[in-house]
Length: 411
Image 1 (cartoon, rainbow, N blue to C red):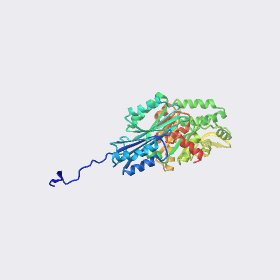
Image 2: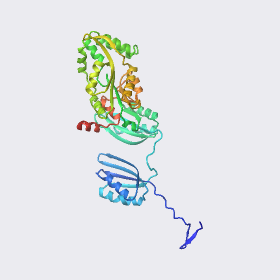
Image 3: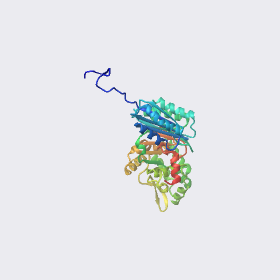
Image 4: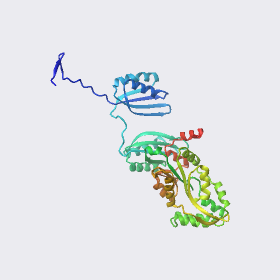
């Protein structure tokens, strides 16, 4: 098109180009008050701003609300939000940004859960340094619990998962805290199967030792246990030898032992909360069905796998009946329970403390070593070394406040 002269100005025939507005980051900070978010969005709507992303954090009565907008002039946005800032006594910053919205990060996002009796600033600095050493960036930190232990959950982007686990593990070992790393994503909100070992996990102590005390053979049973731990006997051999020493014991003792069991602190809270979440729960044990099954029924645990003692004429024969639940049997039980509940193994969680739990921990989507020996911790995805079983909930992203609120309301 030929250029034309209009009122002494050169005109090309096209309207002048107006640069498209850049995305804007609108940040509100100050004392939290009801209705601030609604008023902010009304102000943005008044200047035809499109909302691309929102993030809000509330801590100790303070608010940080960040909104990424597009399509609005910065001056218009600043004018629109200024009355809100003055009325509410908050600070509202408006600045250009090159980021339009959150995008998937290479390597995905990981959740880093930190547990400890005391987590001071120096400890959190070490954890943050471990994330940075794995080329990760912390996007969010949330406190999950403040009593009886402290727990924080970090959402980390960009880190290599294996490198992050290695760095986090080194910090955990050096500082004597627990640090678990697992993938973030929608799977955490889905229905899970939680499988618990019994002896020294769900309960304190070992059932076979309690039976041996009543049969007067505690020393012999302890010697066999020590031989098994030294690798001189496999689990099935050790189990059968120990059970043989119980021959002739009155079967009524089984009920007596069951009544004497002491649950691990937090066990009832853990199972009660899992049931409220509609999770499937299970226990697997190298112990004995006659004692374990009533415990499961009392707690509301849906699946049970354990060894069965043979009883004739009201007395133990010193023999077992049915398949043996050993190291391989525990892993097989986890797979069977998952299939029965139509839950993929990726959404299973196994918790245990002994060497015969290793296959089960490895099989699960998340294997947790609970106050376990080093060989078990090394085989697990995460380790918990505090004496409260309900801290497992923090690894599932369930905060203490929600647990306690549900207990109060019965929800």
